[in-house]
Figure 1: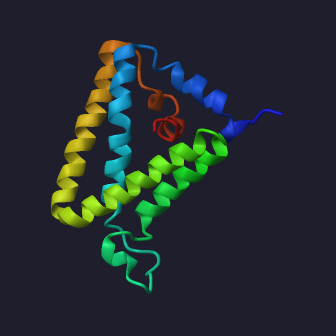
Figure 2: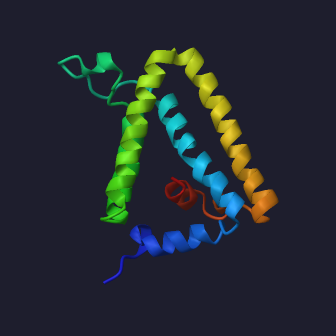
Length: 153
């Protein structure tokens, strides 16, 4: 029995693939999507902690905050979406969260938001250029914003 709705991987890939057939646009997306996820986790590192560890784990930069919740939601979605590729995608999400937490902790808020702003502007601009110049088609998020954000990474 095939999956339907939110957890139908083939339908998601068909939708997303329809917007990404040009090799240059695919290459742009390969290198520019994960930095968007990573820098979102950097910014979300500065949200209030939802739980304080008694042993001092938070001193090392890992907080159960909205950055963790954001990562956990993506990780669970990917594991539910596909039993083989999902755990790898979930691992990548958590590696981004850990790296983003350490980077944000080291840089502090002032430098982090500047890094996030620059990376987000650069990566989103690259993706829109990829669609406008190479794909000659509007990005997937113009038709289904949520699905595009879920399937991007």
